[in-house]
Image (cartoon, rainbow, N blue to C red; front, side, top):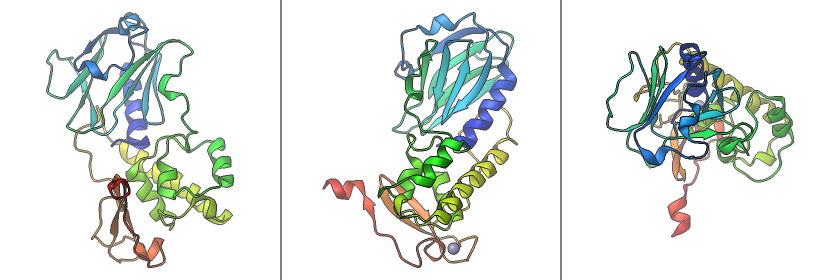
Length: 277
Ligand SMILES: [Zn+2]
C-alpha cells in the first residue's frame, strides 16, 4: 500500500504536471469508487487546478474552493497518460482529463480495500476530518511526548487519527530503526524512547520520500523494493545479522528483529481470527 512517501512524491509530480490547467472531463470507470455525488463531479469541469498536494495518504487537488480527493487504499495506482487515452482498462477506476496536459488514470489491482475519490464543496473536509496531525508537525511531537495508554506501538503508528500517513511498511521500518518492540505500550515509553521514536519516524519517512522523488510519471503497480525490514523475515537484520522474524498481528504481519527490538523475546501471534473464534 502506498504510504506518506509515495503519496507525497506523487503529489509533487502531479502538481508539476498539472497545476494551472483546466479540468476538462472526469470519466468514471468503476462507479463504486466515486464516494460523493453532491457536488457533482461535473461541477469541477472548466475550473482551473490551483495545486496538487497531500494530506495523510490522500491526494488533494485544489480548485480554489472545491477539492478533489483521491485515496489509493491497498492496491490503487496511478498512470499519467500523455497523450490521454480513451480506453477502459481492466482495474480502471476513473480518468481525470486536463486541457493540454496529461490525464490521470486511477486504477487498482485485485485487493479487498478499494481506491476511491471524492468531490468536496468549499469548507467541507469529508474524509480528511478527524485525521491526526502530520508526522512532521509540532502538534504530533507534543502528542507523542505525552501520549498515555496501552496501545501497542505498531497500532499507534498506523492509526490515522493519531498520526497521518504511516502504514504497515513504514511502521516496521520505524520501530526497527528506533529499537522498539512493536508490542510495547505507547504509555510505557520513557522520554528518551519517545524522542528516539519521533526521530525514527521522520528519518524513515525522509528516506522514503528521497527514494520516491527519483521516480517519474505516476505510481506503478510494482513498487521497487524499498524495505530493509518489512516483509523480510528470514533475512538477516541489517543492524545485527540475526534473522528477522514475523508475527501475525490483527489482520496482517509485523516483521521485527528479536535481538534489536524485543530483548530476544519472540512475539506471540495476536491474530484477529484467533480472537474472534
Ligand atoms: Zn537486529
